[in-house]
Image (cartoon, rainbow, N blue to C red):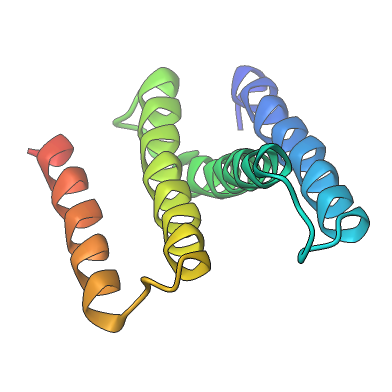
Length: 122
């Protein structure tokens, strides 16, 4: 693995660790039955950024030995896919919090995310 690619993995790891700690702090310190909308929004943003960093780290690692891609292309693809997965995870939690998460709604949500990714692949 090239030295520059090792340096590019550091931001993923830092984002994941930092926002995992903030998500965990919100979960452990806040009463879920008496929470303000600001704290709930902070939780969702923190969770989305944790998923973005964590999934982005592993997606970049999966592509690190790919010779036909330049490092910035690996980074761009990993971040795009991680962002779509983060939207899926947080969107599903928001729908579940409002009791709107049914199997067919989740199926449409997953198909929409897959179509967005397909658009970028074409």
